[in-house]
Image (cartoon, rainbow, N blue to C red; front, side, top):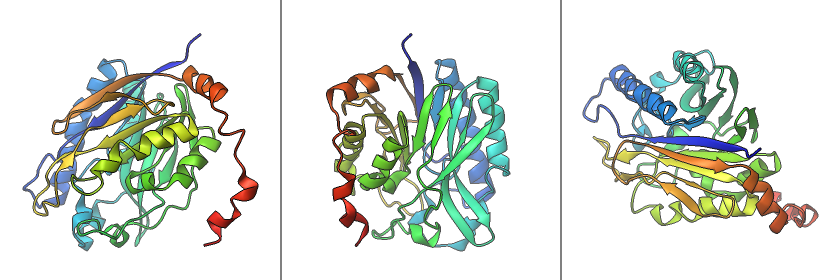
Length: 289
């Protein structure tokens, strides 16, 4: 019997672009996403991934400790608990990127993974933390991830997560493939003029090299007061051959839906034996620098 997973990505603009009230911003974004999650479920999605730190703006455009107050524990924080309720209600796996407080003063850029019965399966913490462009001051906010590259077993496939800047590093993408990922989600926040030319290059390349599906999510709109550029949307799914099979708009809140034939992974691997022909014994220099 074919293994087809209907998957969804949600891209959205900041709900309160002029507000400085952190709690109001956070609540408005959560409130905005609840009907979008319901829309994904109504369209038959089995799995749904939200954008990077979905409940706020991309606050790394400035360095201000006030944003620490938006972090939560995972899984014991209120947003994870709410998403567990929604996952169970809609019978849909949810990947939920949240700003995580692991302990006072220690914060991670994290995604919680919840199954279609509302069970918390675990989390991925972003490994690669940029601090190299004006408006991307992430080392001020995030500790590098320390949980490896887990793959989560769900009713609708084995799911891995890579977050935003991670996508520039092929090593973790390979780890996810070797760990058995069938679908890798990359929730992101990236602006035009910086790495847009890489947006449809790197992640299809990861899909080809590791022969899995990739769901890439980018938010939309501009965010005051920083106005570091246009978050250009264009969230998409690509298949194990690196072909983009569906793509979102550049500037609209949107639920992007695709049917992913997981049997295609075996078909592609039967043709291209990349995992068989790897030479890990010859790659020792990668970790020596």
